[in-house]
Length: 219
Ligand SMILES: [Mg+2]
Image (cartoon, rainbow, N blue to C red; front, side):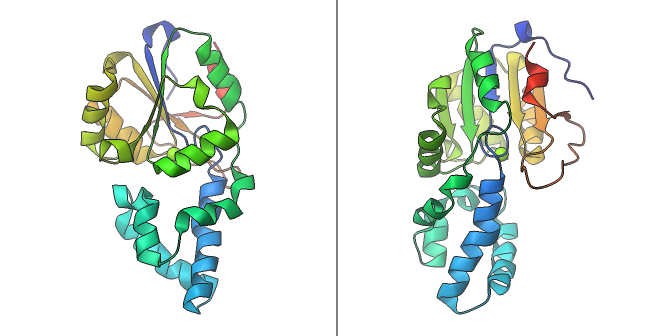
């Protein structure tokens, strides 16, 4: 699988945030370590027990909009889940060469769009910390659209909103389910991220070309 595209065949670049531009370590640490520990303390159970229960719930909700909604988890768990993010803020970091890649795109005449399943308040926090918001023509959260990126409706509604030619669009995302959904919708160029979390080994990106370094796309 090779990245067979030429930049002059691309008008719109759709970029995911967590695990693509930003290190997924923050999110994995938050959901799998910090949140179970905190919620476990509130429930009087161990972090391991809390994680087991949460993993069960995560699995049931995975890929649906509520899974990505911090208000949903706040209601369900009984504490302010967004506020807990401040305890791990120092882990919100760009992936290697991600900012250089954004600068590279800015130098071309492209429509650059952030498309994320992250909840709007969390997008705001991450933009504030990384300062990358100025690189985007649009910043779209699936919570604005009403469907997660895993769902076909997301792509239809996204196109209604920002109007792009899917034959001349490139999507870069670390989530294979999202890439398959985009491909099914007809987005011509779909690339995966090999190593979304700096602390975990590279993933098998299956049918999708894997970006090992954004520097490989500086052409
Ligand atoms: Mg992602």
